[in-house]
Image (cartoon, rainbow, N blue to C red):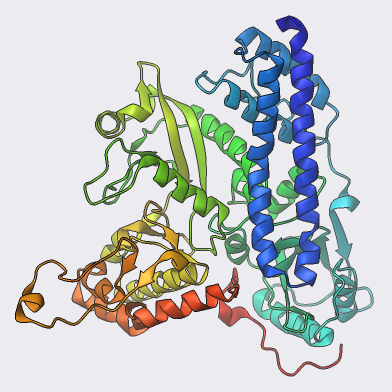
Length: 578
């Protein structure tokens, strides 16, 4: 078969590859309801990992088949141009054509990894910036209090596609309606009120979330109702969310992706953008589980931003890391992290091991305490936008990972991550009350990561950041490991004066040994900071505390993770019969 006649078969194989991937994706996603109804929390974690891995699996299978079609020869630019044209024709009638484009791009990059990005061969820019409008009735359902606001809430509860008995439906409806005036005092009566709810349910961890909009006399606000299951598998509403900042935390880049079924992801993201106008579309695509398309949208947004800005990429603020060379574009809230050619002597790790650490974070539940990342290969950025200091830094620290020409900087491997203020810098500049709140958040972050079977390893303040909502997030992953793999020990008591005066440990220390008592010595340089932290989280210096978490993990317990403050939760008294 000559190259000219290969274009359509290659295009068809990529199309089939995405179709097969999509079917598997939908099957896993649709089963989220069953896992929730049956309280199968370990199965939830397994399904998350399976769905995440399935994309690369289908890209790899498609790539292998195409390599066989061309007898192992490379595919030149002319054939890719023809293949792109054939593929565009195949997906032209698909509502989600932009998702097909992303899969095509992944296959293209897999087969031509060193090639420059070329819109003639790939879909660098989408051919479908405005997909067909989704039927409104298929996306949302609107409720009016014609028979009273209580009956309207009963209708919302009745329409839930969840087959569980309620713990106490009337109590929960009462809790929602009592909370509404405090949360939205602008709503003074039921006259003129409408509640527009998405038909899709958002499942994550142990929760299911109803999401929608409140409409009242020309004003619109978000609404979310988190649903949980009790130990007797009965359903209850845990709180009411109708504030943009609170909903933003629910859709944070620090949390696991939702399981949410929709045939109209573009329309769903459009809807969510009306609730969260400060969220980038790329983040919302990732949040609803389409993380690879989120990466595509991020890249397109970055290219557009570069066209409409003129600031330079610079070395990121904060203490420079021992493993990563990190830079940022001040006008774009993202950091770029490149693995250095050589690590500091105290870092006993390889580049491949660093990549595996980042893969652990990608696969694991981030419990609102670890930043999501996107991984790029051969990312090309304009040379003129790099500061001289940054060019010098990259040449010195990561020469094997960058190719620098007069026109561009090509980065062979890089992670992108949300830009945050390093915690050590925040504490240096904050007043005492803000410092106390940040330290409390820092301790909570460590505890919640540990309860989710993650040990940060290097817990210095500089390895944590603080978000605009005041949440403390871990973002330096090169020493991360599973908590269950760590041996938490007490520091042996010295038996001789020589042991007591020794500058180095006189006792044997294995690679996975950790001595929590020593955290006091190296985590905090300022005594008053150390004292403040110990008052709030002193148990973190006790090996027995860490071992108790390991025991819980070994018994298969899955922690509760709430994307809202615990004090917001409704008080549940003895349940009446619903």
